[in-house]
Length: 339
Image 1 (cartoon, rainbow, N blue to C red):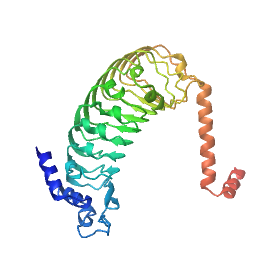
Image 2: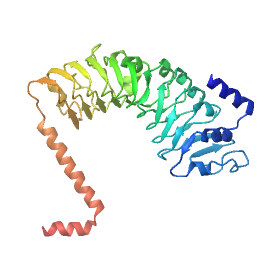
Image 3: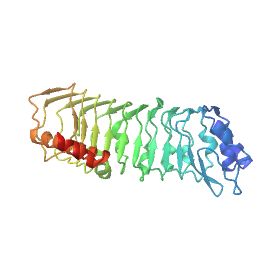
Image 4: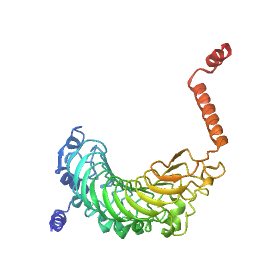
């Protein structure tokens, strides 16, 4: 009802983009930096009615294309219904403030490519109209705590999405209900939520499995065996996999063919049996970080000494060359010659 009233007022007033921002500004209660409340001035307009020198605002031909207000400590209500008319808005980045409100009516911002509302006080569920945002490439909703509920089915329409961060909220539901929608996302972090079910990426789209580089599902309520459907899928690009602090059981999957894997975190689960011997072979992975602690693993763990030795020597060489670049070459060579 409130939304309909706001829409009627906006239509009746014929809000331009700068007028919508002035209406949005009314919800801002505190501006510690003093950059927004003072610069967002109705008198500061260019000839095409674009905001002129409004902090964090980019505009072209009367249409606002970007709002960037990260880390200003702004306090107040950020009303999405007020800005539904910003048809040219591509970037909305308001991270690390104290904005409250809901994400209702966000589906009207159809030009939006970059959305970052992380580190605020938004609440409520993610609306199904997110499926209308088909230009979205980057979504960060992390650290709002009171954002939650079941993820809607609209993510299956976001073919351009590459980055999705939902960590530190109260989202729930079957984890594969979300992952089965994703198409070619490269970065996914859903850690510290209330997702449940088993992580069976054999049921996900092959394009997602092939493209994902960073996958963090830690701190949820996932159960069962990892990749139980068809075994471990063929990750072409996976570099980071964190499934720690869940209730996963069964054996540790054989990651031998995930040749790009650098970080593997499976600690604090209920994994059992012995570690796959091929996991740490130098020909299989380039692991630099492995944590399997707080499980129920048995047997001996064999580390490839040759791999560790070459990694250490490589580190020493790179460190030495870095010092040469930082310091005067001739002076350093003279000092080393005298040793």
